[in-house]
Image (tube, rainbow, N blue to C red; front, side, top):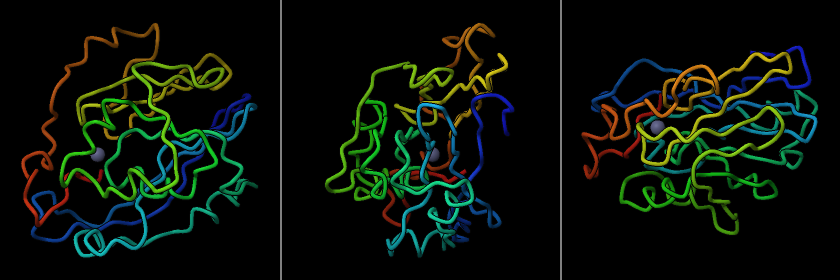
Length: 216
Ligand SMILES: [Zn+2]
């Protein structure tokens, strides 16, 4: 997706992941993306993909990493240029490289931080990288002109989605692991069901062979 106006959105292919055959959500290899929002106020990254170097994740998901540095460089940016990170939720495949982004404001819902302290929810050192501050928010927030965080609990208790106006009055929704929410003025955002999603990962919570969080 790319807006022709002041705001552009680019998909960054950060990893390829292959769930191990014993996982209930086993499926063929699939890509994991982050999204770069090129905004006049500074680059915004939505989700940072799978982290690097965790043996448990390597065994379960066999991630093949593609450099976030090279992905950003294709747009003339470096990691340190990113001013804002929006983490849709703290599953391992959405916050994995936040450790590289400590110079940015990292926005995550307070409810998600609370949820992510549970055992096997995520990779703790990726969700809460040492020395990296998370900025916790409660509910919706306008991050920049035309970039709006919408709280969208369901897949996780503190999931958040992003609505972006491309500069031509066309709203685009980015759902993380949730289906897109209706953009403002295009339906009742609060009509969405709130509660546990039927994510297969939820059925495995507490099973030490797995890690809570289906990458999709
Ligand atoms: Zn997830």
